[in-house]
Length: 150
Image (cartoon, rainbow, N blue to C red):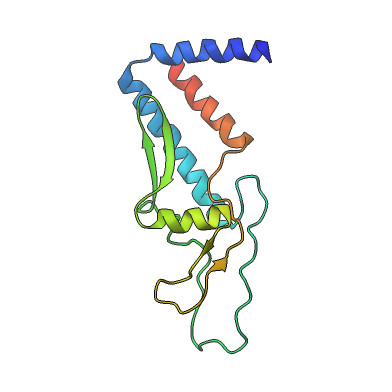
């Protein structure tokens, strides 16, 4: 572990030597790549570790005719709601605005009311991890950092 700490300290020093503008550009590139990866995972209905999302609860037998169900989180994964931000010190992917609450409920598997005007009681949602990093993402981040240090 100590040999990795020395490497990490050296890498941090090299990144600190970059100008703030190039660090911001690097962070923005990392954030955009991570957002694209998260969008792919959400589209494929799987968590960042590769496990599939918990299935939707079954709907009543006699539902409205002609209603077409969309896949889960179709709008949530758009660039309008999933923001990539990069500063000189960090890179982040987050949900923006009004969808943050819904994303938090599904990510952690919390209780929530399906609709504000709904007469239904609170519903316990299954945990569906929407954002996260896996080993493949870390490798891509390292590749981007190395390219900026050349």
